[in-house]
Image (cartoon, rainbow, N blue to C red):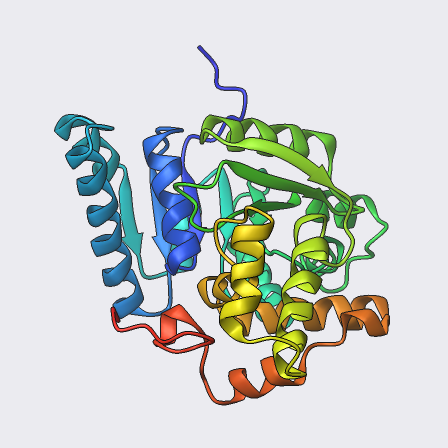
Length: 303
């Protein structure tokens, strides 16, 4: 029986928390062999350890049998070169939220992968159209048949953190994305056990165009001394029923990621309502990045 998405093997670029989570659901739920690539051997090693921890946790809670966990683990391999991905049917890029970095990654994928492979980005805010434009080979007109064909396979596939838990994927089409690319990407996300929403290619898409200004306003509220950290978060936990307050959520996301997205919103719209909080900028300058660094708006002793 044919598979709607047609993905027989997946590549994941970036072995951080997001990339590892995407590999996890792809191997476990979609049952697709996955190759994870990262330039850092340490990151790759940590990714495999984290995958083992996730699978062991699911076994201990009775969500998986030991054989199911072993099968999922066997579907995942790490690779240290892009050329090892040359035969995959789809790649999901999950590197840092920097446009130039993503463009470099996608140029490498264009040169390495077969022409039919889908090139998906897990960006949470950067223009998919700009990334797709960078895939057009040098010397080729973007509007030519070859230019349109190259860019048509780029798509936004925004998973949410933590990927094994969060049920949503945001699907974003670039101006150049083909219907086939969109349809196959949607089918793959659904095979990973996710619900799919769509957004136009605007700064922040739907999710972060709403979430990040909310977090930024909460940080400004703290910056101006309007309320304490604890009272800001308690207001949203107890008054609005949120599972965590905006400052705790910012720590969980990563303050550097919050700042990067907020800057994308600000520069992409030129609207002053998206100006990043000065306090957020200073905390990132200090490398107080939240949970992952051990300190943000809260302190963490589990690193």
